[in-house]
Image (cartoon, rainbow, N blue to C red; front, side):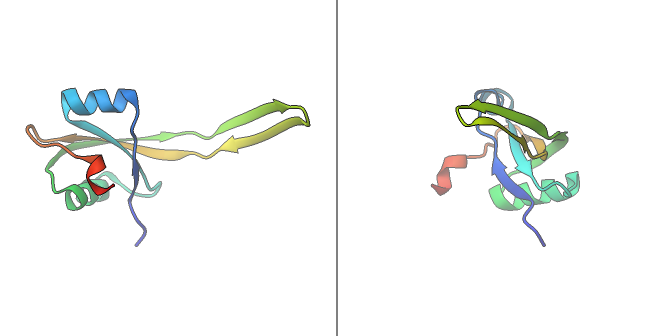
Length: 97
């Protein structure tokens, strides 16, 4: 079985939501569903998950203009999950460092 949780999203917006609303954001495997994501987070961080929302970020084309010419490529598509944790609980991403 492949790993479901790839990495947490640590941005200014995600950190603000984590502090104020107990809402955490993760990049997850593309084929995972909400039930699998909920079980994986509860097992990994030992918290109670209230709800899971998912969204798929589409691929983007990237063009860079350099001295050597134009370089074109693409960023891959990925799936993101926004997880609401029960009141009074929190997830510490920096505990495993």
